[in-house]
Length: 118
Image (cartoon, rainbow, N blue to C red; front, side, top):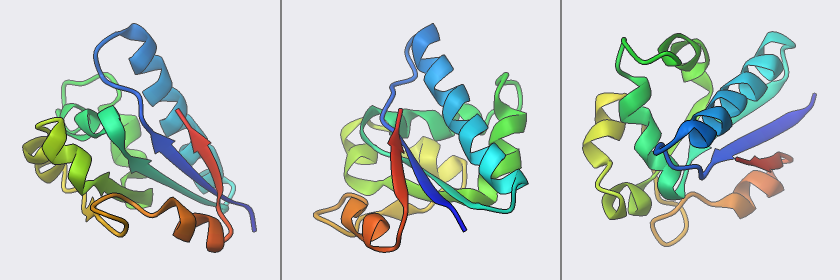
């Protein structure tokens, strides 16, 4: 079984950022449709996305909901730093804080995940 972890670092400020988020959703969706292991994490400025994607009027809301079971979580430290805690909670995404308040990339690698960053 193939295993991929897509980490979204892209902010949610402009059209290019939206493209990165769309690609992240598409990658995870492709893996899930092929019954492979694909997970998504929000880190850095990427933590600003969950609150926006949880809005039913957002153009990528449907794609977000489709892969939501594959979302591992959002960086706890970065959610506070980017003032995105409320949006992450609104989206129902768990906080990850395995390594100094951040998600552990090392644990993902040890678990056999290939890392893709957007």
